[in-house]
Length: 409
Image (cartoon, rainbow, N blue to C red; front, side, top):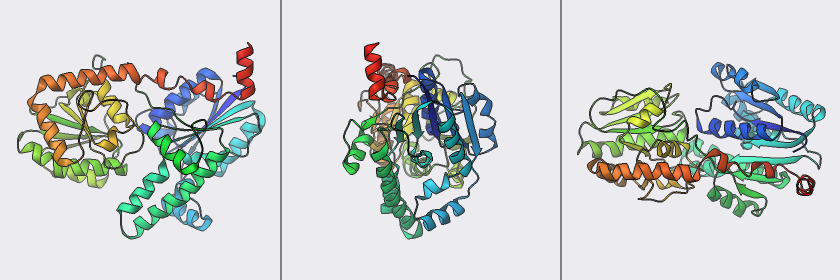
């Protein structure tokens, strides 16, 4: 394409060590193959700020800001402005100013906003500038679910957030040229509520770095001792992950240990919440916190589990485990959106009793577990290379005139 791209994301895309950063990192790298990319993003902490130099190797220019607004201030501001609390939490006048300058000074032909909380940084654009809104997940539906299942003040806050954020998402969708979601299931749900068709609401699926998540790659091995090892990976201050491991550790693992007393459950991921740290006091539970390389834990796992009760889109943790050729037992919510078949590429278990039964069955039949693992790896190779899942991205950034010019050339 002629011209340049403005890319806005709510977290710096480096390092790609959590779900949102994995997707934004690969999106950024693909965009940089199309045209120079100017990146505006936030850092959560000092560690994030240290990756500015890595971002600079890909970005034509960048604005990296430390996100310093507290949840309390964001909440009060959002309530006062009748604004989504998520939008209020990710607000910063300096980024608004940088976006304005970049649009004024650079030949920007496309703006890509990653995640709903970045859409409010996108001003009214000239008619020749394309706007791709990558919602990733249908976030307002997640908050609505929290509100419906909870009670007390937090349930009221979540119900309000679901309503207000949905109104915002629909307004953004009306002015964006294309809105993308991580799976066709998410895209279809959003089409139903916003009234736009598949020409405007599309799926851009996640992929997996198959050369990195490869059982034959070079990575440090884990000394995991004796007995079956069950592994869960993820950002461990994220509510769906917290609830998943609590359910598995307290309800599923005891049933497994009644058959395999030496079975252990490793919870592998950064920033474990206090509820997660407390699980280490239970028999057989290991809480690692952040690890330098998650592949060693995945490779050591007899079974990887993904028992999420609330999940949106495509779960990277499932793709990565399958790419590492490990047998996976996932909840229907974690499996939704993944183009793979139950009992062929992975196993789907709807509740703790089913999870325990299916894990025990895999531990009793290593040959079946190995067949499942290899089929999962093969499916990732067939279907989930990033080069394949992002293949259509350049066309989404081209205007009708650009496409006509490309055809004429």
